[in-house]
Image (tube, rainbow, N blue to C red):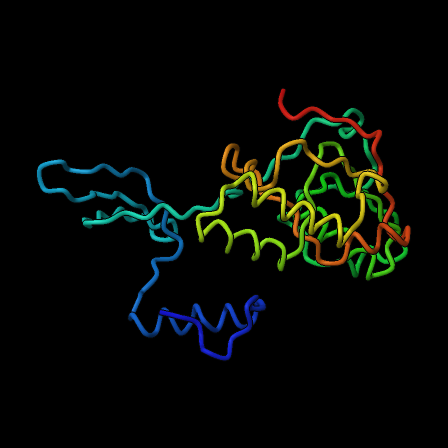
Length: 231
């Protein structure tokens, strides 16, 4: 089911939600909410999947049989808070980015955003818009692109252009757009963004305006902050 013909290339949140509602209505889909899949296996003889699930609110088990099984839990379904020295005695508030709503209640306060991926950069941008004294940690090298640059890269890949050439083009476009982001505390990876995505699954950061905030020093970059990623 395609998007409406008048939909923009990059559909905003409201438009995407409207599309999902239309999709559900058009195909008469009845989502099973509050239901957790406990197991799934494929019967080789029948060629069908057998899925066991549990409705959390009713404590009822259900079993589904289907020809196809789509696992769509997303790439970042579980939040992770790293070990940070002194965090256990920190007197302020801290939480994972998945719990963030907006920066209204932090107006006039100082907030440190740990991580310069998509969530971190978007949150830093939003906090700054709310008048929060915002700093962000840039620990690892990162590619910062725009939606248009990513779109160009994906189109080139769909035409069969080799990944290394696509990476060269999108990095060049990023440099033309943002300049040398290492000047702001963001070292660029040695490998290209699409190579990294294909090889390790890490998505490049899509700038929504945070780079300009950093350029104007409305968001400070902290490059000396360190933490453990595992115990």
